[in-house]
Length: 234
Ligand SMILES: Nc1ncnc2c1ncn2[C@@H]1O[C@H](COP(=O)(O)OP(=O)(O)O)[C@@H](O)[C@H]1O
Ligand SMILES: [Mg+2]
Image 1: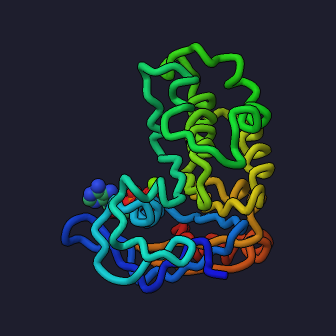
Image 2: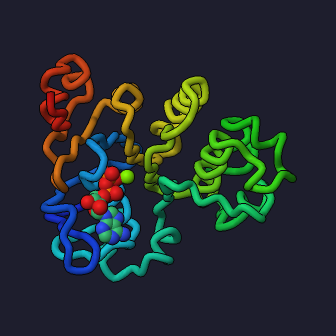
């Protein structure tokens, strides 16, 4: 079977500027991985490249064996990519219910299943998007992406800026999502503790390149190596 998502020798950026270089990455159906790395190393650019929001300078991308290069960004969601952007991008003047229904498609993820994961949202269906707390907006953004019934879900720093207790709630939801219905997930995280708990495989990026692709536990148990990889200067 083809990998759910496969990037080969991908270089991409903004206009002429190359930000990520020579990225090779294959994710199986149902596999979850985390991507960590300092600010500005290209994590968001990697996800944006999969979604078609950057200039592809070299390499190939395939979703379930289908070449993505000729698929315009607006059709990549239809092709099976779900995206939870770093800015969440909740529609402020739509209700929670309306936000959820934008782009919803039939499949494993129904509103009922999503409300089981996020009971809070069910209580707030008639609230406007901009009346939600940061944590609720994040949950809405994830719920909305799930309802498009993607085969690959990309999440960009979902725990960023949330209170510790909300991070715990959200982490528990992410753990429940892993491997459900063959969903593949790429989780970009600043919080390496969340990343290592989420997936057995972690990628570390530095200066636009993948500098580690392997067991999460290896990095978790070797803080010195981790610090070197993420380029923390002492
Ligand atoms: N829209 C853009 N146009 C030009 N450069 C950008 C844009 N977005 C990000 N960059 C640059 O690309 C590099 C990687 O950024 P980004 O992918 O956001 O990193 P990360 O998500 O790891 O913090 C940074 O140097 C950043 O300034
Ligand atoms: Mg980012």
